[in-house]
Length: 223
Ligand code: GRF
Image (cartoon, rainbow, N blue to C red):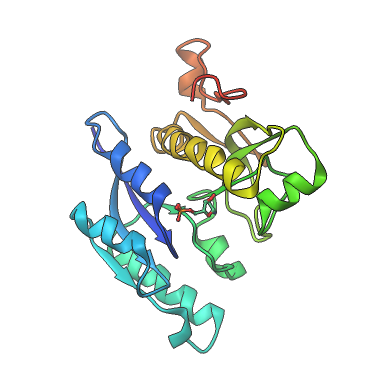
């Protein structure tokens, strides 16, 4: 099986990176991680890549005069590794429009809310403040506006009475670790693709009959 060559962008802890690393160890998984890039030199996730013998490097944004120059260096490194699909996993930099265009429909992000609700930072605090009863996480294709783009998959998590940012965040994070590999499998295998500005099952999958290509686990079930 030809595996899709994936690059992962991180800035910190890298627990989602770890989930992708574990998934990619499964022989039938349709993607392999060929490069991890961090914009922060001491990011914990770099050690996770090294432990898994995945090439990892730091490209520190502080060394560049502009966002465009940093992004160009990123693309150069990713191209040198022949990356076909890019996954942001806790990457804390906004991308320039030219970078987003370059990786259009080949670039995923994970966000800890049910988008389009609660885009941006401090998600769990704002979820609690708003009093919503469901939160969750979303994997989506990247578009120029932060935390927008065609949605590949979502997992919903109950907000429980007495939840704190930490307790809710921990349950959402556990869901992220299941959701991101699932979404990457769908995209890397070609089971889904972008149609218009939505994600849909690709024709080949439809031809094989109905299946849960756009599975969105509801509540905590199936996670
Ligand atoms: C995750 O909650 C992810 O959704 C958000 O940043 C966090 C990164 O965590 N974009 P980790 O570095 O993957 O542990």
